[in-house]
Image (cartoon, rainbow, N blue to C red; front, side):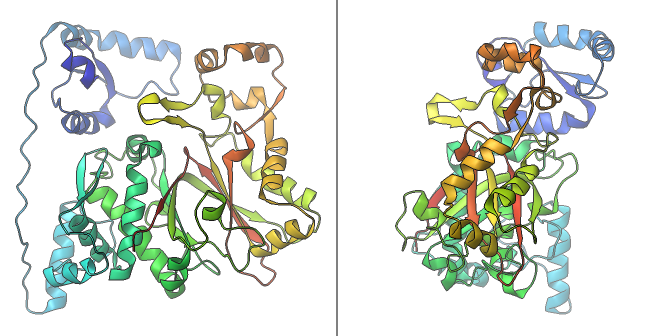
Length: 450
C-alpha cells in the first residue's frame, strides 16, 4: 500500500480496530505514517459473507475518503532521542538494577525477565568476544529497519546474560534473520506464534558447552549457553528490529518458545553426518542455522523396533491441519525473484539417539526417512482445504482443480521430501523421545566468524 501511495495510486486498507496501532507503526516504518485506513470492528477472517458485507457497507464512507483525498508523506512521529548513557541510582546496586529493569519494562525493551544491566564496562567486555569493530553494521533488521551494529548486538547479548565467547554465535544468528530467504517481516509481524529455533554445529558448540543432550532446549544450568544465546536473539529482534509485542508483533496468543530456543546437534549420538556437513559445510566449520517454527509436538515411541512402524508414528505428528504449513504448498510458495526467494515450508524433525541408531542399524539414512515421511504423512484433499481459500489453489495450481471432484484423494502435507529437516539431539539411555517442529518457511545457515 505504501509503495502504491508513493506512486500516487490511491489505496485504502480495511483495518480491524485491534490492528490500528500496528498499521500506523507499520506505515511509519515503511515511510508513510498517514496512509488511509477504513476501520472495522473485527477482521474479515472467520466471518460470514453477510457479516463482511455489513462491515464494508458501514465503512464505505471511509473508503471513498481514502481514495479521493490526497495523502501526503507526512514525517514520522518524533521519537525520543536516545541519550548516550542512562543512569539509575539508589541506595545500593541491587536497588539501582531494579530501577533499570522497571524502566526497561516501561519502555518495552525487556522480554519480561530481569535483564543484566548493560553498563559500559559490561558491553566493553562483551565486545572482546569478536574482532569486528563496534560500529560495524552487521545487518539491517525488519520490520523496523533497525541498524544492527556489533555494539547494539553486544548490548542485547549482555542484557540476555551472554558471555563474550557467545557473541559470535549471536551475530551469526542475527545474520540468519536478515537473509532475504528468511522473509523476516512476515515472521516478525504475524498474528502467528513464529519463533526462531537456533541450531549450532561444529567445534564452537562443544567449546561453548551448548547442550545437545538432556534438556537441550532448557531449562537449567546444563543449558545456560543455549538459554542466553536464544534470549539474546529475541532481544535483538525487539530492540534493533522493533519487533515489539502488541505493536508490530501481533501474535494472537503468544508462545513460550519465543523467549529462547537454541541447541546443538548430538554428533556423538548420531550415526549420520551432521546437519551442517549435509548442507555443504566442512565438518570442522562452526555454523548457526535458524528456522522459524510455529510449535512443537513430542515424538515419543518406547515400543517399536521396526523403522517402518517408527516412521509411521512420526508421520502422525505431521498430519495436523490446524498448523498453517500443513498443505500450504497447495496455495503456492512465498516467492520474490529479486532475492531468489522461492520458499517451501520446512518442518524440523529432532530424532533422539536411540531412534537414530534404530534407523541406522536397519540401513535407513536421513534421505530414506524423509522419503518415508513424505509418503506416509498424507491427508485427504478435503481436510487440507478446510482452512484454506479456494482461490489460492486456483491461482497456484490450476491443474489440480480436478481434486474438488475427488475430495478424499490423499495428498502430502509438504511439497517435497526435502521439506523435512532432520537433526539428532537429546539424551541417550532409553529415552525414546524426539520432537517435531511445525515450520514456517525455509531455514538459513551461516558460518560463525570466530
